[in-house]
Image (cartoon, rainbow, N blue to C red; front, side, top):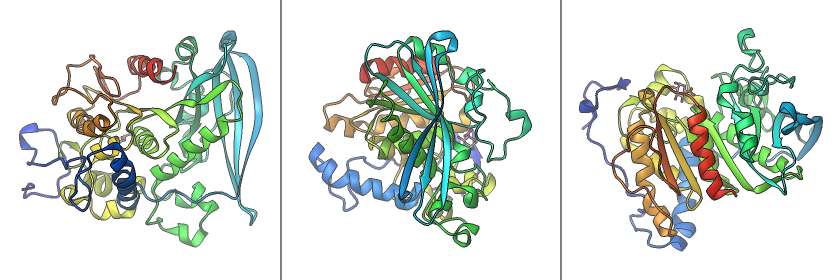
Length: 403
Ligand code: GCU
């Protein structure tokens, strides 16, 4: 069935994709079919969550003994007066004296009537890259190369004025402060709150970096309970690329996020692992040395996605009945936009159980034409990136689900 010239590293020829099947999203491990949302919630949803924890993203990190929030700075007339800006440090403490912290950066529309909805996400290079304002430089634990220690380096990915104008707050932190994004990042990650140096010398088999980044996102949402301007019952989680994989995993687990924005997440995110096009699990693990994004089981089985007891549309289905939006880009074939669509489409039956609207068409739409509501998909013309057209679509959905 699969190409004899395995190991399959990368394929950009659609005609060469080996035959593959997408497991029925309503089928349980014992072969029975789910027929109602009650059965879904009682049986298949918990079963699937367990499967994704055991085989892909790892276990939920342990709980710190204590969590503290410190308001470090506040500016009531940020962005020329349209926003309140806050920097809050979240500190995790263990009873044995260990502690770790990271700093969040929030922009909140000024002068809003009542509480506002919020977008929560992580940045690659630090809080300082989303704005030209004098905020703290974070993510330095990487350590960040000097050319990345530049304010405003990624303002194009974070259109703050636009978000404020449409009435949404945004809160970010650097993922490197949670788990430095490198294969030997374990010892410097926040897993060191819970595990010994010795345990962290090697990878933790049952945990992953995505699992810890996701843990960080949930902790940011907890912290937002302390901000009177923000309505945490109207929160979206967003992420681009590896952080899109992270936002999807977060949205699957943390039901407080009512809208889940998954940008160009590709392999190990929204894309089907069995469709061997663009990046493959095998290339991630064996060629790009990014197996630590996942738990060790996945690393050991990356060559044979057809044998995995799960597929990525099932991950999307875990977000149901909450809204999920999958974005791809035409020039991001590495992420296999077509399979990201198939994945979103095949999560549909679970949305139908809830009376929600699945994607209608089994084939992907033309570029720049967003489709769907409860499950939606958008293929932007252009490269692998998070850009204003993506935000426009996310905010259009937010106007439906968070307002
Ligand atoms: C690499 C990786 C992708 C990932 C991307 C990113 O291209 O292979 O899986 O999504 O980096 O995070 O930018």
